[in-house]
Length: 108
Image 1 (tube, rainbow, N blue to C red):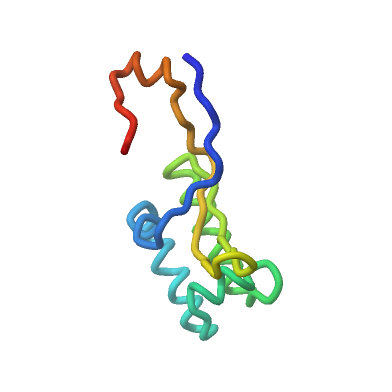
Image 2 (cartoon, one colour):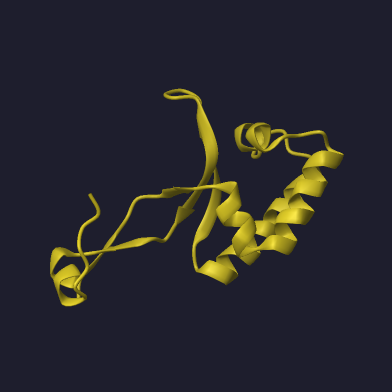
């Protein structure tokens, strides 16, 4: 069966927290301690991130991948629509033949 790799998919903080609740709480505590919000973290995570926040992020991302099999990344699209958030990499689409085999209808 042919599977097609899907481009990175946006996920909500709620989805992340549901997948790895303990790490999400620890990450939010590190953000609060550094007085950084989720949006600001997504914009500056690779440039101006406090060490404690970065370590909490690394733990969160690692545990998320272990729990879901998906890589987690902050998303920052300030240049186009100003949106920030989180992406997962590693999601797959079934090909049309695979969808027919599993009797899956396309979402409208």
